[in-house]
Amino acid sequence: MLGTIMSVIKAYMGTGFVTVIFLLCLVYLVFTERDRVKRCVFIYMPLVVIIVFLCPLTYIFYGKVSEDVTYYRLLWLIPVTPVIAYAAVTYLSDIKEGAKKTAVTLALALFVAFAGKLMYTSVHMVKAENVYHMPQAVVDICDAIHVDGREVRAAMPEELMQFVRQYDPCICLAYGRQYLMAVYQEENDFRDAMIARDTYLIGTLGTVREVHYIIVRPGEEFEELPVNYEEYMRIDGFIIYKNTVVSTEV
Image 1 (cartoon, one colour):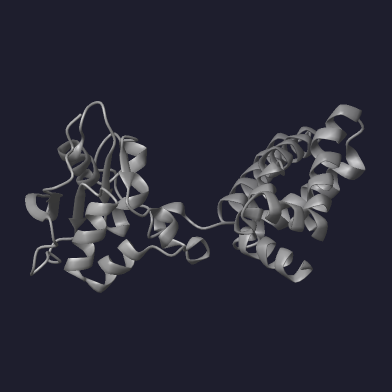
Image 2: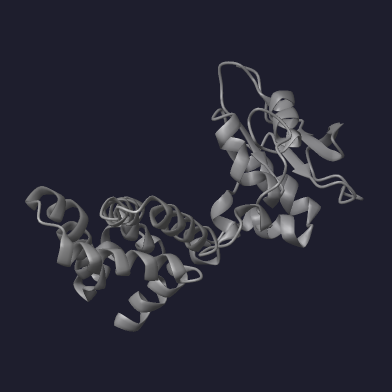
């Protein structure tokens, strides 16, 4: 149990440098801060959260009321940035010499800057294509299949799933983003049929589940149309198939 909790902390720490800075600042404040209120906010509260997080009983209870895979979110309660900022300002305030204060400020800023990784190097960071900060294909496809006054169900490629509901909450997914994360996987025969490219089962289940549209990636169009579906349109290379039996009318 404790090993699992520690693995969560290790994964959350990233490079670990920010954690080291935070702990050093925490120790510094323990010996220098005298104000009771500030000690509660910057020392006692973070320590309590850490202790509670490390407690196996907390992990067990959290797993009962939520998914234990999101246990790391409790670490968001630790005011890491405020503690580092306050400790740094407090330390710099005690330095009277201007040149030394400037040098220490630059040193601290550089240390913090190089303590992590540049966020733009992540594979998940892409240049914004629109004001929504999501792929333009999502906007175009959702606009094309949206129906005023009712919900529409669609099967989307995995790379579009996480954006659809952000842009248009009236478009429901036949299977959602949880299938991108192995810990959330549940049995879904329609998704299995999509993976197997079983056009008969896709059409049959899609009609029963009232999946109005099926969207596939460019170059992955069906050689044989799923039962009860026809090609509706192509947008940004994606192919949209529409169910001819299940109506989208209000």
